[in-house]
Image (cartoon, rainbow, N blue to C red; front, side, top):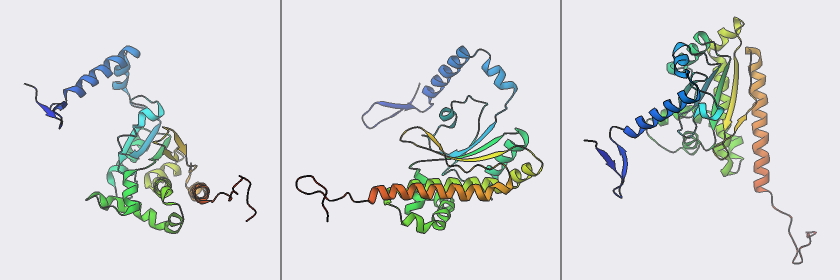
Length: 253
């Protein structure tokens, strides 16, 4: 007998056994194999992604789908607010395996607009245990407190999203794994991107580093660009149109 969880109106929401997901999985596997015969056999034999994606756990940001890559082509690590914390052995282990074992060429830190974790950090919204994790985002907020306070309220969360991406990309560059790879001449490029939930597009924040001596300049340049762009948006939001006379002509006053 199959049990179902009911919605308030009485309609079936989902089965306890989640059979609907198994059915979708079978359909996906059948369609994939029909489209690319032998796909799963090849996938079984080798994993050779060129990219490590460090992104947010938000369900609206499916990494492979956003860049049109198949399973096996993108190594993915996700957590709340796409953080790379120097004491997080989970994330550090992912980077170490990606760089040393899989030999990825690119590490991409990806944030997204209207991030709930960043919003909570920006507004001091209490959410429970995750507040301790989001303290790292608040450290970024506090480091740029003056800049953020000078922006229109509607811009502050997304500005912090981008500032956080820059900070986490720089943190990736500072890991012993990446620094050791650079010392031995291994090609590893670190990037910082942001994904727009409103349009589905990725944007390069221009923090791109291929060696330790590029990190400082890459960060400073990207930071200046982010601040310039948000100050321009703030000016556009807060500028007052020139007064208009009763007849529609511009007033001299």
